[in-house]
Every structure is written in structure tokens, then in C-alpha cells.
Length: 424
Image (cartoon, rainbow, N blue to C red; front, side):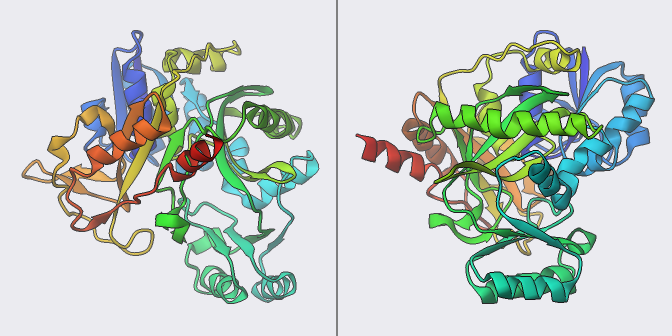
């Protein structure tokens, strides 16, 4: 079969890599892809928002399945468009994708279907939002209601920080229309983790859990980012907590979406916090997480294409997982997540086995050099029997890259290792 992956980031690179392993796959196409994805798929220079050109390509190339990676085309209705053309596509339709496209819709769903989450209020008026923040005090969390490329969240530890973020979002329109409405939430304390699942209607098939590091710098300092590294499994989150998260959070949201006449087919990503009262929902996304996908999919033993096809056909997929731990460290451009420069060559990449590198924001210049084309540039993985060993492996590899114009966190996986040491 020919398959088409829509997107250009590290998540899509991980999907392409895993699909290319399937004995059923003839060609993996990726639109628009990046310099690294070109090693694992055939690049198609069509923008992910050009639905007409993408669907025409799928027809002409006899594509049996299209898998949509990013949130923007999903929220804009790419799945509806492909289905109208009679094409098989994996992802939620526009109505279901609102689970990610609107934070206030997601919070309403959690409230209505008794899914554990933080207390919240939604505002489209600056003065009312300001009054609410002053009344609640800090710490407090501000979220742009719409899509903001994973950056529309401020965890404000002081009142000053909260009011400054509010002004940036609602007055200065830092995230454009996405922050014209805000969700303001109670600050939750605990251990953060991510759980993704293949979903079809009320059927939920969970993947292995992962832990992401959101802050830009070591010791969880600096601004929130799209994610600076991740690992799977999470030795200090028990199987019972994962199962409770499936039963109390993933299954109810799938059933709730079906009950609302918005049945969900695709990937539901739950960003969770293990609090003293048990797991609570921070957010839902309507697609594979990034960078979690880059550490979860390498652990999948089953044929990913067959999993997608089985889920779409209403069959229970076979999900077998490797025991190995995978840890990934993100290389980011200096200045990320704020302003950063593009175009700098990534030196030293030739010294790393390409199978360990998942490209996020890269392109090849006229001289054939791989250059940075985004804030998060790539992710380097280590795969080994334990988190400790996979971490050593990942850092040994990423150290071969010159860091002029780039940076990476030096402490990815530290919580897992600290908890393992305290357990011993």
C-alpha cells in the first residue's frame, strides 16, 4: 500500500519511520516533510493546509491511507474534506477536533462528563479576566482558548506574572485570535505525564505513557515550550495510575464525544497531572503529542499501519510493546520559544546514526547541509533496557552536535532516575 503522512515535524518523522517498517507498505509519502523525513519517506512539496492538492495527490498516487499529524489541518476540517472525496484518512473530523481547537469546549466536556480536572473560568473580556485573577491570586494558569502551537499556556507563579501574561495574550494579541478568549485555571501540583490512545467512537486503545519536559531550561526553569525532551516508560508512575487514567479520563471523554454527536476517531492525547487526589486532566489534544510520539512509537512492536486500519474498521488492534526504554532530547534554536534565527547549519549530525535522530524543523540548503528551520530543530533518542542507560546513550549522541546557535536541556529523565535511586 501507499500511505501519506501530512505534516512536517518530529512527530510526523516518528510516524513515517514506524510506517516504513510495515511489510504492507510500498511507499510512505510525507507532505510537506523536512530534511530528516526524506530519509524515511518520499517528500511531497504540498503544504499541510492545501487540502485540494493533498487529496488530488492521494488519488493520483493510489494512497490507501492518509494519516494527519498536526492540529491545524485537523481543526480546519481536512478529515471531512478527504472523506467527502471518498479517501480513507486517520484523524478526527472538524467537530471532534474541537476537543483541542477550543480549550473552553474541552473544559466544558470535562465538567459535563465528570472528568477530573482543575477548576476554571473562561473569559473573552480583559477586565473581567483581570478581576478574576486578582481575586484568585497566584499560582494560576492562563491558556489561550485556540490553537497556539503548544505555546499558549502560562503557568504564572506570581500575580505580577499572571497579569503580565494576561496583557500579552488579550491586549497585545501575542497569539492572535487564539488568545481573544482565555481559560484561567487552578494551578495543579504533582507529577505530569502524557497518555495517548487510538480511539474510534467509544473504543479506546491506550499506548504506553510518556513524560515530557515542558520548560525551556534545566531544573524546569524558563518559559513553557512545546517540549524539550521526553521518555517512556515512566518508572515512577504505577500501572494502577495509568489504568485509573484510562477508566476515569480517556474512556469518559470518548463516550462523551459520542454522546455529543461528535464521535472521535483518531488519537486522543491526554496531558495529565498525578495529584494527591489522583490523576487530573491538564489538556486534551486531538492528535499524537510532540515529543511524546518520538519516544512512544519506537517502543511499538505491532505494525502501525495495521493498527490504524483495524481501528478505522472497528476491530480491536493488536498492540504489543517492547520492554526497552526510549529517551529523547530536543535540540532547540537559541531564543526558543521566543524569537530565534533560522538557517544555521547543524554541525556534527553526520557523526550520529540517522536512525536515532528525528527531525522537527530542518531543511537542506543548496550545498546539501542540514539547517535549522524552526524553534525545535530535532530530537536525539537513546534506546536501552533502562531509562538510565537510554539517557546515557541519548546524551552521548547529542554531544556530537555543535551548539553554536543551539541549546538542549541536560536533565531529561532526571526525575525518573532520582525516583529509581530513592526506591533503591
